[in-house]
Amino acid sequence: MTDGVANSVAGFMTGGLALSAAWGLFWLAISLVGLSRGTCGWRVVFMSVVGGCVPLALAIALVWWMGGFERMTSVFVMGLLGMPTVLAGFGLRRMPDGQRAGTHLAAGVRHLRENLLGVHQGCGGCHDGHDQKTCR
Figure 1 (cartoon, rainbow, N blue to C red):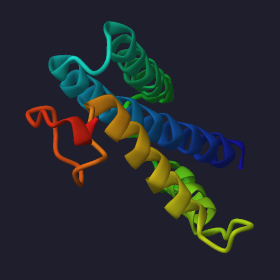
Figure 2: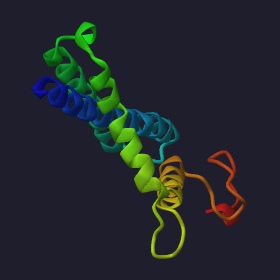
Figure 3: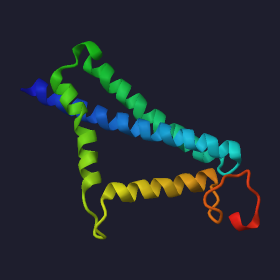
């Protein structure tokens, strides 16, 4: 009984850490493009590296502590799927304005991505190669 609970909790934590690492690495790719375009600085890239590598290192340490992939049980795998399920549930929840929370999250990500990548607003979303005054 205790091993099952420990495996489930370890799987749940590993699933959350893996999602966090993926999120950090996603923003690392965005920030590297922004850095190459000159629309963001090294600090954003560094924070993306930290946001991706720290949870990844913790997930690797947790899997190592559990005894590696050979000792993973079905209870661990069910726990591993727990955090994505929880996040999907939160994403489907309705906000006070009637939209789903996932829609708000996607809009926020789109806005932040456009700010980091320097997408122009006045001409329909062209990129840094366009130099008209209406785009700025």
